[in-house]
Length: 427
Image 1: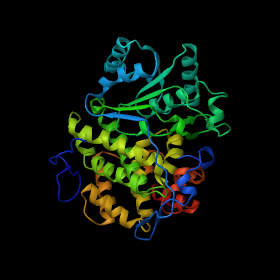
Image 2: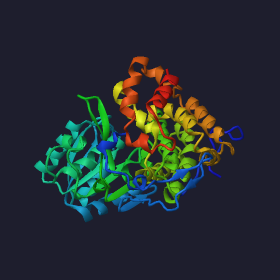
Image 3: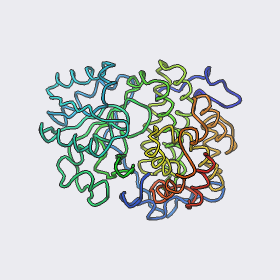
């Protein structure tokens, strides 16, 4: 049995872990499944996708499991001879992870150019600098190692290094990526964002207070390498925020208008793996079984929502995060119960499946209450007002969130007034 964390019947610490295993619509490529109607939910959340065309796309190769970082040098040597290595600013070097990456690559004849300038909320300028570095050194491969920010920067550097124009033109939708760029390998060190298997890159324009995606199937990695041992050094608060981001992605991917049988299978298993193991990893950071469950769950959630899309949590999270400079996973965590209650009338049956996957019982509302208790145990606030939201900002946030592709994929149709009501509940 996978360890339950917060249901009345189970102790979250003693339970065992499982082994073995957004964005304004005009900025994004059309979602084919939604264009054909996508999934249809009745009032109890039964899904009817008969007669609808659904698309599932993922990366070319996924390598995962404990110790899988050892496969990097062989994969890199297959794809190129000079790699731009994209990372955050300091932690991986301090922890000795970079040496474990660079030396084997050099041993296989792959030269490494280090680009360690990625900030927590990567900007368009950071991507431009990465592209300049890759061009100057004539790199023929990009490798990203780190959290979602490092991976998102690496994706766009690889995708645009040979492309005309500048990053801002793609960010604003004035240009589209029309062909594959350099080979790209993604290695997450959080369990988390699922960025290693998605086709979008979330970037920020600090000047315009805009956070949105560049999206293209040409941004998909050639190799996603997921080694749970790389997540063992994550601080508890990063474990909590990235884990709640992944759980939100799993739940939203499971219930979105673009969901279907293939993505549902991935998303629901992700809910189980993440929801039953997050608290254990938070409270016992060295528990490799819990870390492996989170890494696998995050990977599966990413595979699901990359095709199914997300929902109103992510639609709201981007404008909130960029306005108050708060971690994306934290914002998603706070919003999740509110949006789930809003969606309950149209996806009750699916939320009952979520509750069962969490081990919380068979009632849809039980899953929401489970998540609220989980937030308390993780030390996460219950309202956005606790870290900045004020009533004067609600109108602008709601207007920014309404045209988001994520908001449009929400299972229940969302109006401006609905978003305002959700935000006012958070004061």
